[in-house]
Length: 82
Image (cartoon, rainbow, N blue to C red):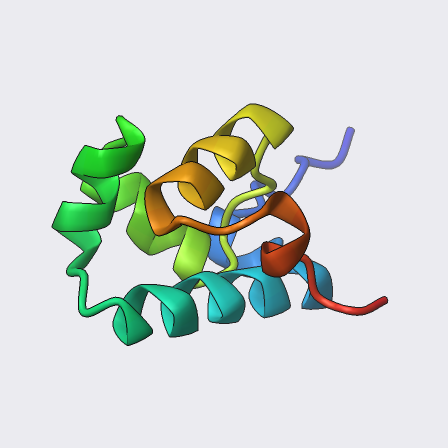
């Protein structure tokens, strides 16, 4: 029986996840927030925010809502075109 290859988060990135992360990063930088600041406002860990921005997370709608609220924007503002 063949051994299953373990796929690390960095290898699971999708174009949509990467685009979402880029939008979050752009808005965060426009608001002059660090990842730690955003994480604190969104009640998330700063390493989680970092991995979202790198497109390594398939983020839940709950956490998208937390980020939108912390960034002072609507959920739709974080959504990339498909």
